[in-house]
Length: 204
Length: 377
Image (cartoon, rainbow over all chains, first blue to last red; front, side, top):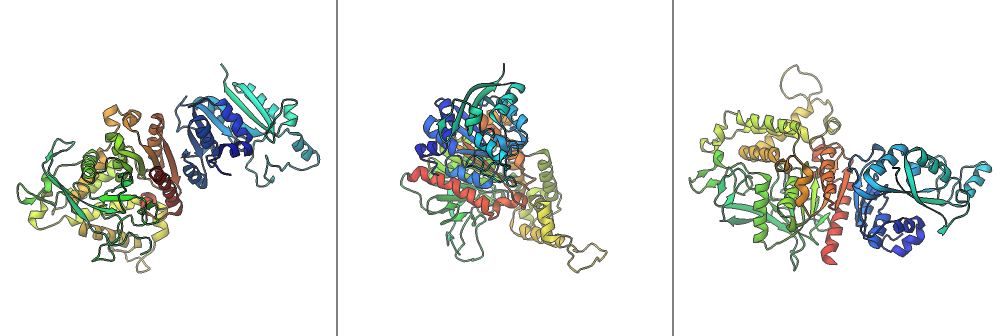
């Protein structure tokens, strides 16, 4: 995947386009678990965003630097104490929520450091996943590419689970987009959507 | 040697404009020795300044023609095809003012007295060094550095550049450094200084005219320093509890391998380094504190900076710990500056920044390639 071609990236990662659509020109963005920096690069190129990534892996730190994005090496599980409160317009957690151990604390930290939070995650309630379970096996798919024994995903959830979580944690959902293979899903999202993207803020 | 800049020679620059130091003392005239590697490009946009740490100097890479063993102190980082690639960059190393490798320092002859400066050489600070380095840049016709790079005390100079000359540095690479020394660090430096100051051969800093050198003090200072630059694990791995004769001798001669190593390092250092320079360098470390004049607010101190930063630390470096680097990063983030931070897993303690660690070098290479794209594009 070439990080320098926005069109190619948007096709490969539909959640990128959805996230970018919510980010106004020139906004400041903190991308938690930013991987090789593709999303930040995309937001820099398409939204002139001022961004920083947080990554734990050595290889990804180098990939981010090659991609020309700012990256801070650190472990999300130990919190965001290196970042001041309300320092960013947006704090993004893209396809990482399900792999965090201290999920509650991290969402709280996202809304301390950012004005708004954006998360994307694979919907465990997607019908193909349900079908796999019915057949007696953990789902393995493009969105969930791991075997049960080697997956980093420790907190998989459905759209319904996440929305209940938000209600119980003073998180106010502003917008939601649900997708399957790049197409927008509007009917029965918790059943028909493979990936969800949420924009939220602290409940008043 | 592969990828070496090859045979190099030092050059000397003389400055006749008086330099007023932070202390108020004035140096009417001084010399700086320096070396350069690679070629300065047409618009002079590819220059990198390498600032040295406590015991460093201008001989950063390559060898001298008359001594094949004289490899520069950061030769593993600098050369054709190396992370700081001399095919792309014009690299400058200098010996700081107050040094003992050719630049004007306590062991130089004071033209006013015809004798070595000794105790009368002013205590110089990181700010003073940066001011003198800027004059060297002027002389070489470099208006803006592509990068200023340094580890430890060298990293402090690199950061100071971004504060004192914000328009003259595009990138700062601050490695294994700190926004100021911790109390414990100052304490270590004070023990080192006391070893020198209480050596009977010190003569108040004017030992040159007595034909002696406070070697015992300097040796102890270096032994202490050396312990703090390594990690407990690195020392245990290298020496363990190994005994030179394989058994206890119930005496005070060298028995453990580590004792032998430290004494050897101390002796080697004391044979070539100047004790007054050691005192001066440790003081420069202690005084460095850009937040001090901003009400101890590091965020305010970095408000002047415009450069892009790469900050690197090493996990086992307890003298300039990752926590200290993260404090720098936090202040840079506060000021909305571009910054990347790498925390490198290494077993070698503070000395890691001099080691050819694969990931560290890959990271440096990636960042420097980005810098090179700015002026080759």
